[in-house]
Image 1 (cartoon, each protein chain N blue to C red):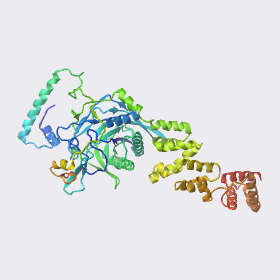
Image 2 (cartoon, each protein chain N blue to C red):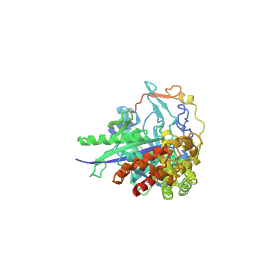
Image 3 (tube, rainbow over the protein chains, first blue to last red):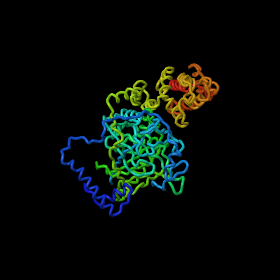
Image 4 (cartoon, rainbow over the protein chains, first blue to last red):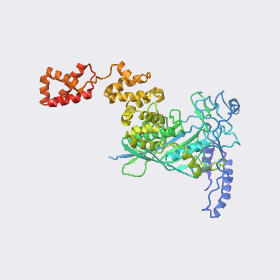
Length: 96
Length: 480
């Protein structure tokens, strides 16, 4: 995989970020360096090795189905950039 | 002219009826004041740690067992990344790469034919919050009560061929999840939602056509309408020389049409990757065995047993199988009344239509077992005609505890229990008064039987047992 200008534009769009041309060149360089580092693994024969998805040996960390205290609404809304007494307010997004 | 074949695949979201959310302890009660069922986890505060709900796992395993799906021993959760204001984390927790089960099937009946619908897989995930666009002209309002509600998504193979089959499948699935008690399956409230993938292809081809996915169908009827509309639309496009592009469609229930929801530009790139916060889920044979042991007998097993034991129709057996309350009433009544077939017919002709049209349960109908059995006995004894019993006595039963016999007497519906000799005398008189008609009958005008019956009914004030009278009349006319 190669990081190029086109891919950066796509990632910007997906991450809702806007980079300057300078930042883009730097980003292309950085990401290519990171890939190069990870690609070192290709030097090993790993076809029998399961991917390591989780670092701990834990599994089935579950909770019983019980309702506990809810967060106070005023407290939750107080952290939002905009709200009325009931809802978080965001700039109009229309799905359709 | 090219003939087209249709392929329909369904993605059904089933909202589980647990107490709390999938990964935190907020309530999932429907219809509460906005943003009152939230916590740092559902708001995606930094540093919070999700923990999976045991009830979601158990209900998921129940559904997998019911549809004979192969349960994966080790599964895990992925992040499906996209930005939308009602998704505070910026990703949905779902199972993409390793869903907890794969394969399986659910049988449906279409017309008279049994069809086995193949299930591709089922996976666990969480719901998003709700965006409301109509409250404020400049803003969208966000309610996060629903964010994190546990869902199962069941995906079928594209093996359904008509809108009717899709309808039957959804209806069957809804009955099943209600029967298992894992969801209330209420499409209008969104606790069961179906996305319908529809494609058409030339009949001779085996390669699937490009599909369009219709979202937002919130009733069984709409699903059927939306699919039929989509089949027609695609057929028209292709016949006019056009091509179908993969598109997400919205169904407008008011107008009964589908419309593109997003344009091609907006194709999603969800960048799935394993969620590092949720350790793998291991479903051991022992655990699965425990869940299986605690599950009720499955409806189709009951259905087959009832057909075999009682000789009732498949439709009737199915109704009883999926409705434990109705079934136990039927079985109580069978202890008091011998004919399962006649009893089942009373259910399919009167009781079930009433339940469906009035939206009540059998309990709310206020029918006593003795009343039901008494009604059938009146018919069996030839004391009341079945049409009068159904039309006039049955509605009275629900008004009070009065016995069917009392009602029949009160409404003057009891038929005269005339002896054979009495009936013969009656017909002799009628023959004497209408000798011309008797001759006409004997020379072949068999339709006159009705005339003689009519005379006899008139003479008795409408209270003859018609079957018995007709037998005697027939015998007398043939021996004249």
